[in-house]
Length: 153
Image (cartoon, rainbow, N blue to C red):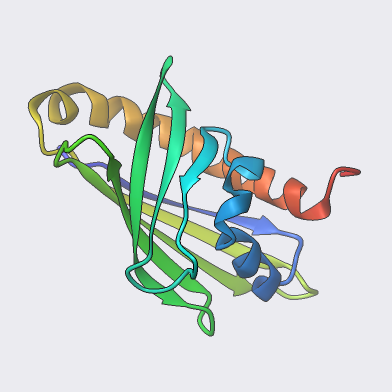
């Protein structure tokens, strides 16, 4: 079973600023509640760049490795493939698109496609994770908007 989904939410900041904030890997833990820290980061965020974060979710933690598949600042689109950093073949594809939404605001669309390749991830974990993402992704976009406004927000 694969889990796919997408969420679109508004952010009251200009699209170019949102894209720049999202693709600044050092800021990931500031707005993504399950990312505890950035463990490894590339010198430059671009196609084929890789980074590793520590994830804390479901009562445990693990390292997740991501590889940029598409990076287009002009269109404000990026996508990457992420997987645990332990050799498990399961992975997810994430795609972000930021569009202007009038009056200096933006629409952020996040899509995901889960690819559970092992038995337990297919039978159990992908179903649980798919349901969690429907709540977590809108919350992350809201946290992103708050983080962009700074500590006084």
